[in-house]
Length: 153
Picture 1 (cartoon, rainbow, N blue to C red):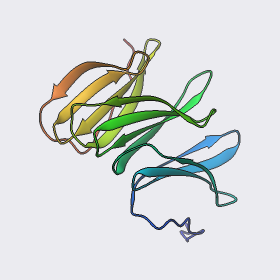
Picture 2 (picture 1 turned 90 degrees about the vertical axis):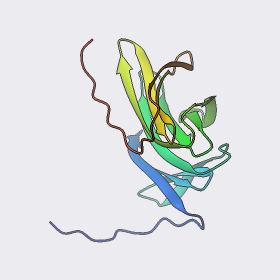
Picture 3 (picture 1 turned 30 degrees about the horizontal axis):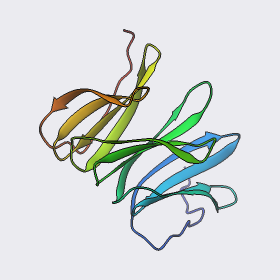
């Protein structure tokens, strides 16, 4: 296997997180630069969209797709999570979590609802995205990584 650098996508700020995905046959990379998120077309190396709205560094991101839309969920060290509509290029939901600065997040679906698990300095919480309500707090201790497994039930 040959590994070589393809190119550089440059911004003048510190990079904390990234996620890649495919939408409409375009390979996209979302990168957290400080308080902003830039989405890049990986083929043309051009910025598609710059997301602004967090008050502090973006440390976690995940992509969620349903029948109608594609969303990017971001978590920041300011303790907020944001849901961005990638089809409308807008911030649709924002909520403040009780875990302190968000260091990791994972998305999962159960029955017909989408959930996000956020982890930070003060524990782990599960949120229902449809109602933007906290379902439960799982832990009181610091957590810097998550893995969620889907199961039937």
